[in-house]
Length: 95
Image (cartoon, rainbow, N blue to C red; front, side, top):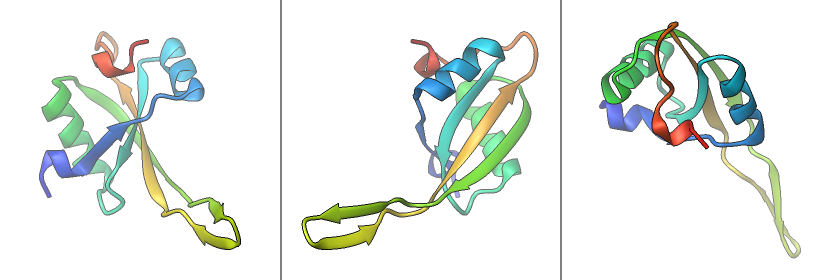
């Protein structure tokens, strides 16, 4: 799995932006098969920052309806990346 396969997209929500203002922390959607070490290496390589901590959570898919048909969205993995002091959050997370 390459670094580009590990990180899927940044998560820019009100909660994620609020956390970024308090601490050097940002959120990413990552591959569900990636572990914390792979996520850390991918972030350090792609964004050229030093990572202090990685926390992950698996978000379960929500129930979706289209008329009378129901189904569930896929489960996905979210990673909270905390940077070491003095490191700057990447540009995509700045609003």
